[in-house]
Length: 209
Length: 165
Image (cartoon, rainbow over all chains, first blue to last red; front, side, top):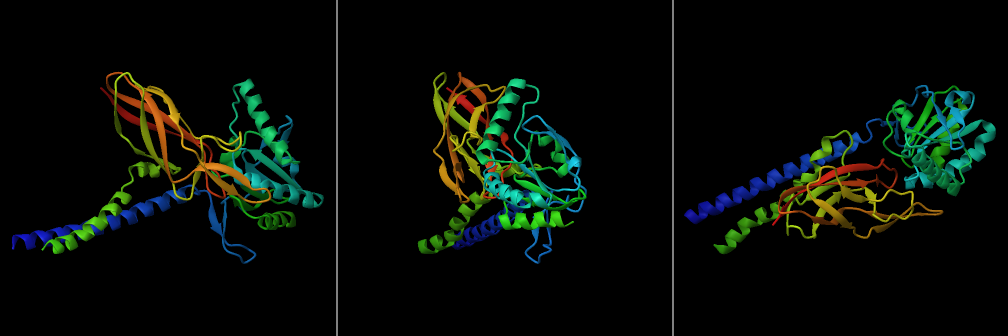
């Protein structure tokens, strides 16, 4: 009799443990999903005007592009405001970002294709820069320039993207690209690697407005 | 009767691995603004011979769907995974033995060949401590990506209580 009671208790304990672990697993997965969602807090799903699946985009879409002035690799100061009247593709990237390297040749092709229609691409480097140490800064600038040369980037590459990251919604994933129309309004955004066709469609949207 | 006990024990045995999987201590910091990609799982403590160099195995886990560069990434501009001593460490970190990374090909025309760590990661830290209990403070720098996007480099603290006898 005692043995039977022991077995029944044992079984019950096993069942309780199974239910508890199932619940714990569910909670852990829920927490993991929430944590994953927090990486894209500045992004949201927006309907695709072309009727495709919803796109991951930024709440900055539809808003005026925050103005900035940054220095390019040649030491020239570039202000976004100076490009009014042009459609601008603002591409945040970094030398340590492999998906950015895949995307760059597409941007170069499309820029060459649409430059005559008034399209300009600005790359903004998110590489860390030691602004207080001239020697280190020069080295960091050189390593960015080396990658820019390897990729044959013909458009301006601006430095110190961190300084404007917050005004663009806080950028925590590279590449992130904003498509700005001729009036200076962000008409589309792309977080992460997309396709060349998708980039072209968004560029056309920037050129059309 | 034995068969019955075995049958009764079956759900318990099945539940144990699930229980182990559900409690992943390293993920406790997922409440931060940016979730942790790399979790330090073990050990909390390690026993070593006082004054002599010992090797301890650090068990880490990289979040599913993400990778970090290996210690020897394919290109100089990629940020390697590195373990270093942190300020205020009461024991010495003499060096680290890193595992070889796995090759990951990204994109095409031409593909980006990367050397990365994914999933479980074992680092072998060579340490030394004088007799007594000492907190070995270390920091791990890594740069994580998915197949489509990369996050900026991060540095996380790791610490192990060394018992040197």
